[in-house]
Image (cartoon, rainbow, N blue to C red; front, side):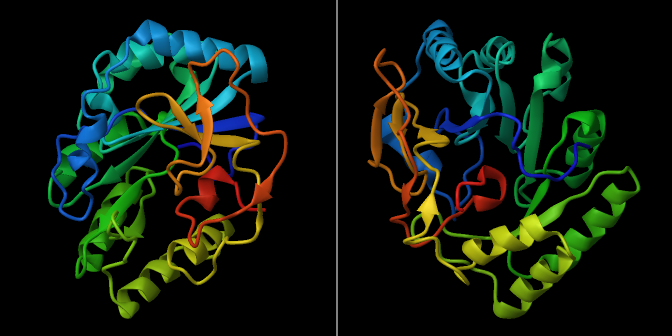
Amino acid sequence: MLPLETVATAKRQFGWALCYTCGYRCSYCGVWKMTYHADTVLDVARWSAAWDRIFDLYGCCKIFISGGEPSTYPGFFDLIADLSRKHRLEICTNLDWDVARLAGIADSRNITVSPTFHPLYADPSAFSDKLARIKDSLRDVRYLLYPGSFDSYLAMRDRLRERQVEIFPIPLRMVTDSKILNDAEELARIEDSFGANSELLNAWKYLTFIDSPRGKLCRSGRDFAMIRPDGHVDRCPQIEGSGLGSIFDPGFRLAAGPSLCESGHCLNPYYLGTVL
C-alpha cells in the first residue's frame, strides 16, 4: 500500500466528478438522482484533448476521479489508460468492477485507487479479495460507517490487517445537507481509531464541523479545481457555481492566486490539501 501522506508531488491537483451514475442506490447519498448531468457522456478523445492541454499548461497533475461511481462511465478504462500517460490519477470508487483491468493499463503505476466499502451493498469477502489483488495500487481504504456498525468495522479491519491492508472508518453523512448520522459516542470511537495520524485528525476537524474553513486562505482555484461532468470548472468542490469556466475552453486558466474560503465546511482538506 502507498504511504498515507499528503499528495504534494504534482504542482496542480484537480477533482473530477466524471459522472453521477452509480450502481448503488444509497439513501443518504442522492448523487445518483442528479439527473441534470445523467446524459452528459462526452467522447473519450474530447476529454483526452482537454487534459493534454492541461498538461501543456501545468505539467503532470494529480487528478482525483470520482462520481457517482466513475467506473460506470462509458469508456472509463480507455480514458484512464490514456490520461495516465501524462497525469497521476487517483480513483475514488466502490470497487464494483473487475480489478484485473488495472493490470492491462501500460502506465498503471500512475494510477492509485481509494476504495470505500459500503456495507449495505458490497460483500466483505469479495471486497477484501479485491483489495488484496491491488494492494500495491491502494492509497486510502475507507469503511462507510452506518450507525451501530463500529464492531463490524473492527472485525473487517482486523481481517484486512492480516493481509497488510489498512482500512479507516468514515461517518455516514447526508449529501444534501452534510448532516452526520452517527452519534457522539460513535464519532469518538472513529476519532480514536485514527491514533496519532495528523492528516486524518486534521480532516476530521472539518468533516465534523469542529473547525470551519470559512475566511481562511485557500489555494482552491489556484492549485486545485473541481471539474463537473459537463466540463464546467469550479474553484471549490463544496460550492457548485464558483466557476472558473470550462476545461474545454482553449482560454481556460486556473486562478492567479489563493482566495478566502466562502464555505462553512470542507469535506476533503486531508487529501486535497487546499486549506492553508
